[in-house]
Image (cartoon, rainbow, N blue to C red):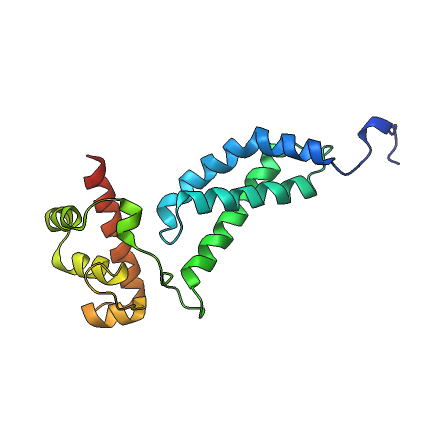
Length: 180
């Protein structure tokens, strides 16, 4: 033991009971939802429900490793929630064969919950032709054929990173148009 310190038996390490863990989950789920909302715009293959579920897994992991003598639970929980969300987004973007692309069953229209004609009208107003083509190819709006970002880049004359930047910029423009 360190000099000048006495060991308080009430502060000894012990595993949390199931009830204590459930209380931590209930009291801190808002944190998982709050962090998940911040990651929503960077996680186009995943929706908010998926992100909240991953945040819950992060909360569970935090409860397993939390030492009540070393700091507030919310600090540890935020770290593990962010870590779980980042891993889930990375895996979803990587897809089945390790490439950075969208999953087969992902539909941009289902995320936006708007009619395809309304989407085309908004895209025509706010996006240039290349941006529209990238969005349509990435999210299979007019064509059901799956394309990787590298393939899309070849079709529109961009590198893979150029496609990613165009996609990010285009989605930002669409979000602004939909929110106004």
